[in-house]
Length: 70
Image (cartoon, rainbow, N blue to C red; front, top):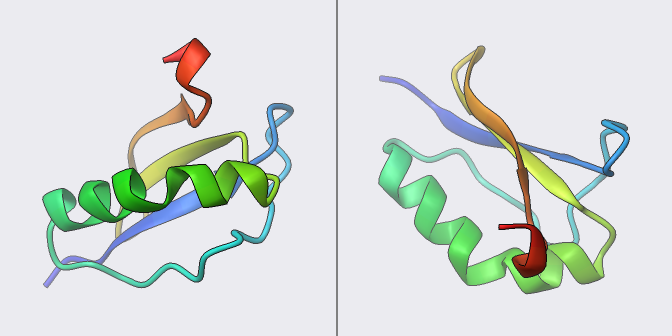
């Protein structure tokens, strides 16, 4: 079964540790729902953008976590 995960970055692409501990999800929808619930805490903790992965395959990103950029 696929594992869906997020990579959290600054705007320059430097990986950062997220302010909210993520998990691995079994569906893309669950991963995206989690991000929607926690994006404010993630940005306050220093993350500016994310990439979504299915196992080792990048599905999309970078996607800004800042509402004015979305």
